[in-house]
Structure formats: structure tokens, C-alpha cells
Image 1 (tube, rainbow, N blue to C red):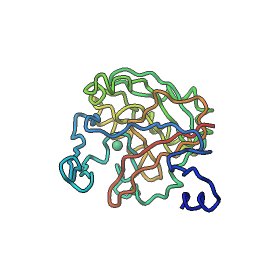
Image 2 (cartoon, helix red, strand yellow):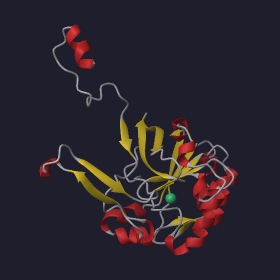
Image 3 (tube, rainbow, N blue to C red):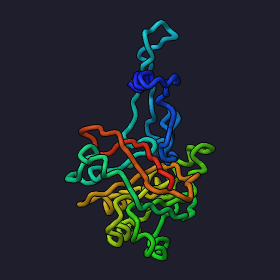
Image 4 (cartoon, helix red, strand yellow):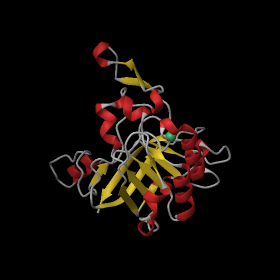
Length: 243
Ligand SMILES: [Zn+2]
């Protein structure tokens, strides 16, 4: 279509669809999915199986991929811990656009928990946000020590999660640079933290985010999940638009 229009107008150059033109500047805040993507507590990873391969005489390239819906950067929707809660595909795309993001550095080491004290002193700023990103720094182990990243991760305490849920009615989502808000070594407390955020409300938890290079001038954040029907949560691509 674009090529045809260009020809009618006597424009010689064919416009390629990959040219960004005046598109806003964006950066990824999610990890790419791969067969070596670390899985929470060393659970099952991703499998990629070729269905057709041109190099082996096939008419095209295509693959079968399989993975847990909680592998890699993903959105936990309420149904993850609340049987009456909404599933991921029941939301519209507008629910995953955030215009008032805020990021805090809360350095945490192995299996440490984010607690109320970590958040209280920043309450005035968090109050204004619609998405709160908590950067523990633990992401630095994701590549160099994926086993540690997947089994010794920091998390959010149950009371810290309850404090977030109770104190900041404008917040619609939180995101972390750890494999889960549940520290593997504090599993039951992690489950309670999830329940405190997801039960009886519309809320999203975005886990395993890439926050290492978070830019200073972030405008909006779009955290678009795969809209798969019949499941609680889904992998997502998170894009930050730069202001
Ligand atoms: Zn999850």
C-alpha cells in the first residue's frame, strides 16, 4: 500500500516498514524469552522445537514453543492467587498502560525481603504513581549465576505487600527485577505477599523485569501480556516510552 502510494506520487524510494519515522523513542524493560531463561526455583524452562525448517527442505521456518506462563518477564493477574480474581485475558490493553511510573533502588542481597521501612520513607512519591518499580540490583546475577538468580532471590515481605496494597490506592501495578516477589527461601511468606496484592482487587505484579538500564526520562510504560484465554497470568513485553 505504502509502495503504491509512493509510486502514484512519483516518489521513487520504497518506504520500508522497519523505518521508525517519527515513532517515540522506546526501550525494553523486559527480557527476551530463551531456552536458557531462568525459571523460579529451577522449574521447567522453555522448549523450542522446529516444525519446519528451510535448511532441511521445509517450505518455511516455524517452531513449536512451550513454557510456563510464569517464565521470563510476565504479568501476574489476580487469578494467580485468587480463584475469584480476573484472568489476564479479561483485561483490555488500556489496563496495561501506565503514565506515572516511579522507580526506587532498594538494594537487596540473597533472600532478603523488602519491608515496610523500605517503602515508608518514600510514601509521598509512591502515592502519585500508577506503577511502582522496585530495583533490588539482584538482576546482576541473572546471566552470570542463573541458579542463584532462580533460587536465592530477594522478595517482598507479606507485611510490605499489605502496606503497598493498603496505602497507595492509585497504584495499579508493581514490578521487580527479581524472578518473583516470592523469595524462594521464604515461600509461604511470598505466597502471602502475592495474596495481599492480588486478592479482591484488580492488580498486576510484573516479575523478572529488566531494570538494569532504566532511563531517567521515562514517560509511559506499556506492559503488554500475551492475551491467552483460560489462564491466570502471561508473559509480557514491557516498553518504556522516553519523554
Ligand atoms: Zn508469576
